[in-house]
Structures are given as C-alpha cells and as structure tokens.
Length: 112
Length: 114
Image (cartoon, rainbow over all chains, first blue to last red; front, side, top):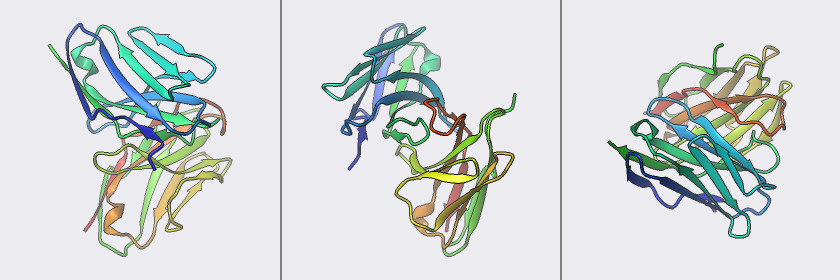
C-alpha cells in the first residue's frame, strides 16, 4: 500500500509558464510534507516544506499548497525555467523528517 | 562546508555476498538515515541512527543492519545479498533526531548484484 502517490510520472511545460506537480497521500497521521528535486547522478535536494498547520508556503518561485481534507498537496513553480528540469519527489512524515515516505517522483521537463 | 559524502560510488557484488556502505554526514549534523531507491521508484526508508542508536526502522529484513560512530558517520551493512538488493542507496543527514528538519542527501552508492 503506497501511502504517498505521485500519479503523473512526467510533465512537460514551456519556459515561463507555470508547472504544477501533484501529490496525494493516504495516511492522515502525516503532518509534515516536503518536496525534493533530483538531478541525474545526484542525491535529492530539499526544495520546500509545509507543516499541516498551514495550507500554503512560498519560497521565491516555489509555492506548496496543502489540502488536508483532500489529502492532497501540490507544488507550483512560476515561472518555470529550463534549469528546473529534474525529478521531483513528494515526501511526508509523522513528526520527524527523518522517517520520510516518498512518492515515486514526477519528471519535469521545461522546454526553452 | 562539506555536504553528505558516501563511499563507494559504485559497487558490484554477487548473490550471497556481504556489503558495507559508508556515509559521512554534513558538518553539524548528528542524525543519519539510509534509503534504498530502486529504479523508477522513490527512496524507501531503511533506518535512522541518532546518538549511535537505531531510532526508527522501515520494512526491511534483518539482513540490513547499520552502525553510527561517535563522529556521527554511519555504515550500512547488507548480508546474504539478493538480486533484488540492486539499487541506489542514499544516505541523508539532519540535526536533532526527531526534529522536523529537511534532510541533506548524498549522491548515493549504486549497488549492482550479479
């Protein structure tokens, strides 16, 4: 039973447009959510996080939205840049960021 | 400021053998977690070490064991290797054990079992 799901394996957007990556979870105990970006041959890099007490968190071009009732979160990238092309992982944890449950990732391609 | 370093970067073993992977956490970090990432999947949590003790464990058999040293570095040991153990093994570090802090990942060790 996969507790964190990223249903879109891939997403392609034009440079300058908005990228929206989605993530669904089933465990209602999850209270901390993170997005990581991964380039080939490198480890995941932390991008942005959100606690369950919030419904939105912004950091520059990146915004994460959390809908607890729907058990859904999304990552918005505006404007998208070619350097954003990577695999994006959604992760969730109960209390500790150490034991994170990851989705299988969405490969984002931003076309110039 | 050195980030998380893992060694070796690649490793080839045969079924039944044993392997040890190593990880040095980011400077200032005291908590190390290990993940297994199979091709096309997200990282799966193996276990976490804090204060030289295993604090949390995922759904992995006892063939997977670890250790944390006083300098916070860590080892992952896998015994009786199976073909299904072929994966990228990622080490992640953070500070404070149960604190809600994002983890810093190393670039991983690619383990291939023949």
